[in-house]
Image 1 (tube, rainbow, N blue to C red):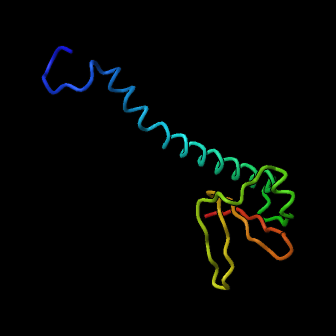
Image 2: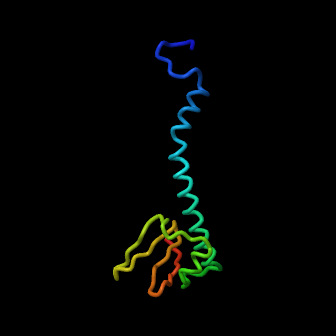
Image 3: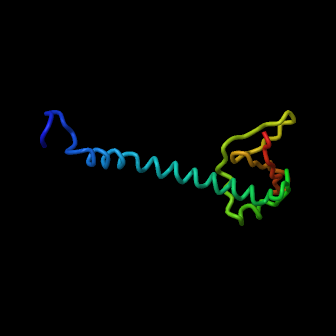
Length: 107
């Protein structure tokens, strides 16, 4: 290799390929999680269509649509102690008997 004595890579392309290879595993994991979050949000949005603010659905219907309960962006706890799980601006509240209340955050 020509250049400085402490040179690690032959050119910019080699350096980029090396660094991209190091980040590939992390980037794939992040990409998969982001895709799951987007899919969950889209499913919630599809059920809350035409300006609806909330709707009650069984768990089975969400799972059939491909919803993954493992992935959500944040939670919100009400003063009464109910915990809503959100995928960005759409959320759900687990109810009794495997039912869920889907909501849209207007804030």
